[in-house]
Image (cartoon, rainbow, N blue to C red; front, side):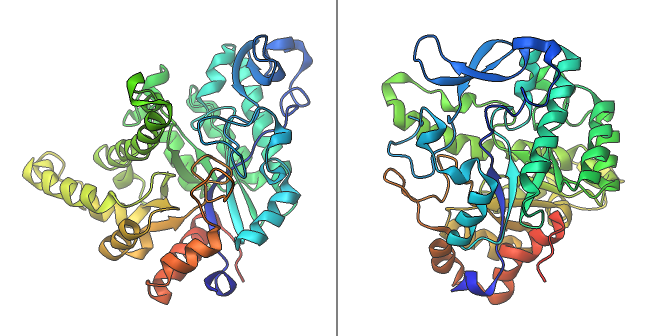
Length: 389
């Protein structure tokens, strides 16, 4: 099998955080403001409380092996695959799936760290960010060449972001998680000059800049009630994939890529089938709209900036992914499984998915060996500094 020949690097998975992640690491002086778990007063199920206000259930996004269709989620951690929250079990599941290494993202704090804002107190917020990053360092320490931590960012404070990038890079983190829509949370938009120290720090410490879908909120999951619960969920999730195009275009049109040529940007969990259209359309409009006259310093077209330093990943796409790889080139793409999320490649009683190694065998067999190696291993090994020898 292909997975016997190539050490596959899965660039988007998530950790289901243990219930004591913050209560065991954050100062007791904050009391119940610290993120913690207790029973919901109505359902009786364990849920996260942030600033003593109820948030998501403890297993709200943990669907690997779950018995119901999303978005009906498991009520407790005991109803989930232990590989979701136990790093030793995760390595066992990776072996079963034919995966050598995995990049690890969060759940509770949101896919752009936006939920930390609910804590309201800036001192508590940064303490919780650091506690999460320290936890993830420890969680991945069981095998730091196979479990690859991505740092949460206090995006509401530029100086703290820079300090945390430096601190976590020294701890062995492989990149930073950033919201694609900071302006939705009271901060300046991505294009604003205030973020320049953040992009420079990512360059200096060789940390990938990762924009995960949903980092600007998950409003797309809400639709007309008459459509039906599951139909709206299906529509909304696809909308979230496509919404990541905004972050991709912003880092190009704002000149971030031009000013920071060594900055590597990843569009996470967005799929890739839409990218050939985006690049062709963006190039055409770039030339048709006079951008070269407005910005003579921009020496590349959008598609060229993309190919130089932007990456995107896919997991269940087949023909559209193959077409994108052949159109844009294998150097720009990565593979993921999204374990253990609702759309992950995690077979179960209520999942359309197949095991990653079976999907890889079926889908990647039509690519050349060079293309397979780049997308499944080499691109990610370079971005996330993984030893595949």
